[in-house]
Image 1 (cartoon, rainbow, N blue to C red):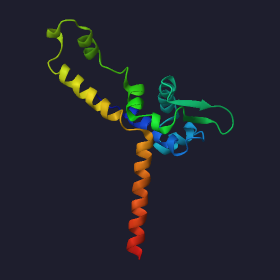
Image 2 (cartoon, rainbow, N blue to C red; image 1 turned 90 degrees about the vertical axis):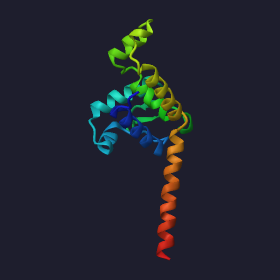
Image 3 (spheres, rainbow, N blue to C red; image 1 turned 90 degrees about the horizontal axis):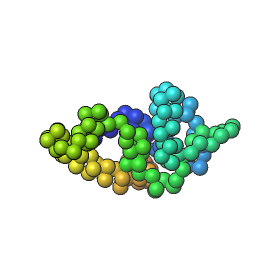
Image 4 (spheres, rainbow, N blue to C red; image 1 turned 30 degrees about the vertical axis):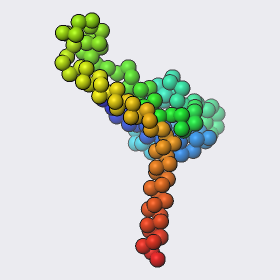
Length: 149
C-alpha cells in the first residue's frame, strides 16, 4: 500500500472543508491554501464526489461541502476514494493469477499490512482530527495564559 501525495492533498482539503461544514469552499481558495493547481484539485474532487464524500454547491458563494457529517467520514474513506484504482500492473497481474507461485513472495505480507493500515485509517474520522486540533489549540492557549501570569 502506498499513500500518494494526491491522498495527502485530498485529506488536507477535506479537513479544510470540515472547519466550516455548512459553508461551501471553492477550489480557488483551496488551491491557494494548499499551494496546488486548480486542475489537480478538480481531479481530486471529482473522485471525492464520485465516492459521495463531497457535494458541489452551485452559484455565487458556491464550492464544495462535506456530503456527510464529519464523524461519518474517515481518513480511510478519503484514501480509498483517491488511491483505490492506482495499483501497479505487476500487482494486478499477481492478484489475477490463480497460481500462487507466480505471485511475488512479499505480496501476502504487503496485502496484510495494507489491510491493517486501512483498518486504522477507517477508525479516524474528520471529526476526531478536528477535535484533537481544537484540544491542542486550547492547551497551547492555557499554557500561554499560565506562563503570562
